Length: 311
Image (cartoon, rainbow, N blue to C red; front, side, top):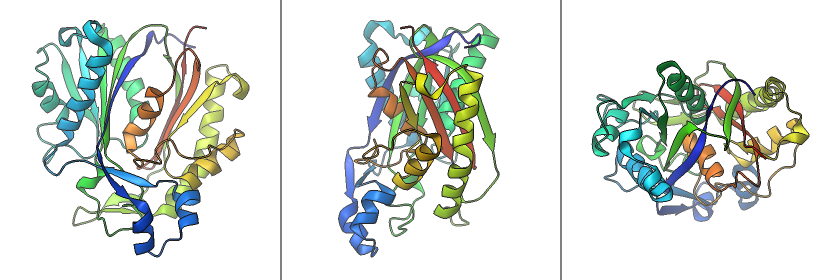
């Protein structure tokens, strides 16, 4: 599995409590209910409070992480925090990780930086953070994901408003044998299929995003299995970014695994970089010791790796 000694120790989560029901919105957009369930796969989307910033969502996720870890998590033991977001506080200066650092009163010895990635961001951060710790001799880090698309999204845009939801996660990375981080496959095909326009409003070409995912993700999964000396049958679970039901169903069919009955995010929406850690937070590492994770979307890019626990 390579020489990476770091693993996922625990995951804290926060999903915004407000929900927008997609059923009446689908009628408003003249979108039939069957397509809502079988193509989009999201029945409600989570929305943060109007006054909340990206850093506030990170703090809430960290509080959940701290509650799960108890005395095992001390701020003084953290060498690094990284915030994965493309919707930073304010205008992005100072960087959101520095703001989170201050709100959590972390020590000066804890470095902090942002990672400007979307759907592939969490998986890419696993490589970035574990690589940083190995290069510096660090022992512990927290990966935050928070990309509240409601900051730039128009609720009148049927291509985005019925898909994306607001959430945040905080993942503790340290040396260990539970969900140890394996080798990666990643890539980019530059495209503006998902971007902010001149007014700062989110726009998406859904067909282009679908084509990218369908053409590139199955190959990435195959290469990742080969890099980690695994077969498809040896993987206990898959945590694939839930871009939409149609995308996931197409990707898993081409991989050769069963399609889910519904998306794990059906009740709160596609949360971009938070989607995969939210899925992992509901998994038991002992029941699923080998998990393949793959994030793909905005960029357009993908990042895939395998997590393994000792059996």
